[in-house]
Length: 297
Image 1 (cartoon, rainbow, N blue to C red):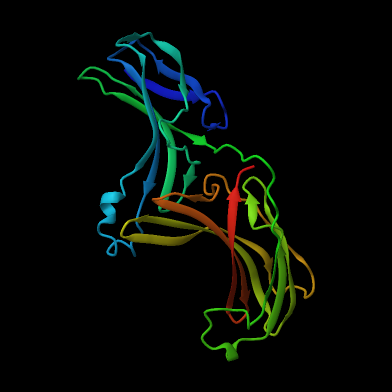
Image 2 (tube, helix red, strand yellow):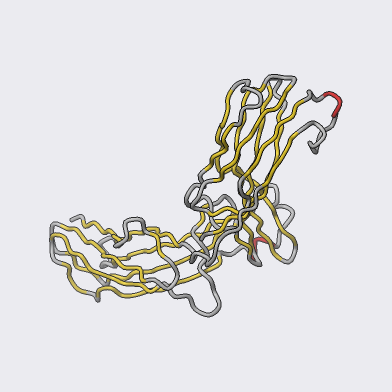
């Protein structure tokens, strides 16, 4: 006798804000009646922190302080022990998204070393001989949009051999001049990053121009902090030796779940940067880095 358990939320996009009500139905499908010892629902919001392998030996004590941070937890009994008839049964439920004390619901974020996740788990307990049923579904929390308007902060840049840092032999570098502009580094997360780039001149032909979005995650405790930068996405905006003095558009959409508004707390930080990467035919790599501040309006 097989029974199936499912959780269906009322909102198709599964996006909720603090203070709203999480509503939906628990669906039990079975050919025959199902005897059970109670059906319960658990809602949980956790921040999971991890250390990168390069930092493990450095912060031994960090393992004790790296326990998951609980943001919200709530449990309700949906149905008391009894029997669910055969066929399809839908049981409605509601959970208010209210936090206790001075805790804050951070926005859902799937990173490498920092993970902020909200889940809803339904458990159907059965007698000793039958297997318990369990179903988990993730819902997404967005922080409340800020009031007011974001002030655009355009950035003009020019890249030449003289402006580069971390160069061993500056004399061996080919001559080049690349100018560009980013319309804003204070970015609204729902709007694309826009700008343009112009290759004024380059001694060596260009192979490729790319935009790299990077997450910078910092986990820490009293001992110190481990800061790790990893790539989220890489977009090629030009290929081959592009025409000189021709504006090349920069356009990047911030991916959902893998980005969130810039976040800083006592235990961890999540920040974002964008790299403009120019690859020359002789495989010289030229990179210009721009820190970004993401927010939701």
